[in-house]
Length: 136
Image 1 (cartoon, rainbow, N blue to C red):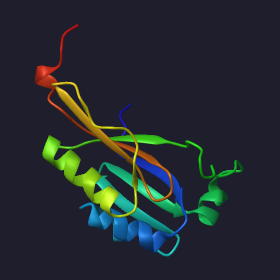
Image 2 (image 1 turned 90 degrees about the horizontal axis):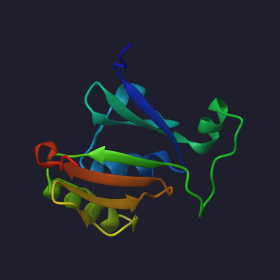
Image 3 (image 1 turned 60 degrees about the vertical axis):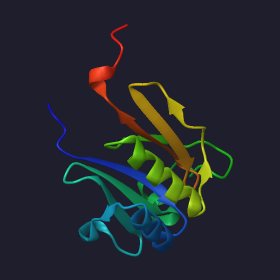
């Protein structure tokens, strides 16, 4: 079996702010799956999406409570094509109301920078050159 698409669902407080934020970071919105209760952000065309759902709408999919402030609910790792793209996305996020998750980490073959988004979701933004990955 092979998965042909992935949809990650995350609760948010404000759909419009979330849409504007991810557009500012340079990601495309899939309008077909977006409305006043949800915004669908394309992480990888036709394969990986993040569905940001308004909290009350998110609650219709689960009987568990939504994590509140000062809790960790999810850490999402996203791989980009260069260190420059990683820093561009993280710096833009920080300039638009997010906070630094961890200091950037440079492992030589892999670089990572991260932020907490407007709703407290953790994003690890990475670039890796697998050809340079240590064998041990």
